[in-house]
Amino acid sequence: MRQEHLELFHAVAESGSITAGGQRLHLSQPAASKRLADLERSLGQRLVDRLPKRGVRLTPAGELLHAYTQRLGALLAQAERSLRGMANLESGRLAIGASSTIGTYLIPAAIATFRRNYPGIALDLRIGNSDAMLALLCDGRIDLACTEDDRRDLGDDVCIDPLGVDELVIICRPGHPLFEHPNLRATDLVRHPFILREPGSGTRTVFERALAQRGLHLEPDLVLGANEAVKLAVAHGDHCAPISGLAVAQELDTGVLARLDVADLTMHRELHRLRLRWRSEDLALRAFIGPLQAQSKRLRPDGPAATRAVASPGDGGTGR
Image (tube, rainbow, N blue to C red):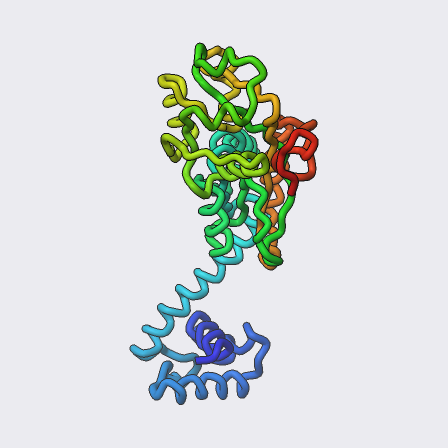
């Protein structure tokens, strides 16, 4: 069945006449009759009975096909309404993926602003480690990924835009033996029990890379898959842990946790927005970038790696 045949049949069925149906499609009566006959021949059965005086009556096969063309017409009309709604940002869907720190402490406020401005657009937020979000992006299951590490192996298909610069800090409980340590250095850290995030986490990647730059390696005493679990474990034990300054700002302000100042270990990381280069950036995604960038202003603008991730070479860190 060809589309023009179905369009003609639907017009005939709706108008009750081959002539009238043809006129709806700007076809002459002979051209409309031929097109209808071609459809009947391709299906091997008659769709209309030509009445003696004027007009047509649908056969049982015609009634069945008319039910389908009605549904098809309604579906096409719905598609047109939906597309117009998307163009006006009145409807649509946007899928965002974010690594744990960004997804928990940065994106929710951006989503709240976006929802106030565009309540008809459905938002789907996925949170996981950086590797998992990159996989979702490359599979086409999310429109935008926000990650916290400086991946260098993304290839030409992924477009990378800066989101902001985040500081990584080392935390412990107040009163921890290392808290009063004079002139604390990275070599002192590796002799104490540490909690790290799971492999693939941006936080862990940046921390381990900074240690490796100094010729150091640390085996974690405990591996936890969420920042909140890390904070609770540190607050109630003798472990230390690297964590985003975003994730721990409130606990440091209230004294629930303490920050260790390590003389030769200052870590910053660039946060990124990732999208597939070949995938069109629709209006909803562009509209979301505004409130996301507004929230990113909460991040430190003056980190030593403002355009390059991790720590600056001047304090022994890793450049990109």
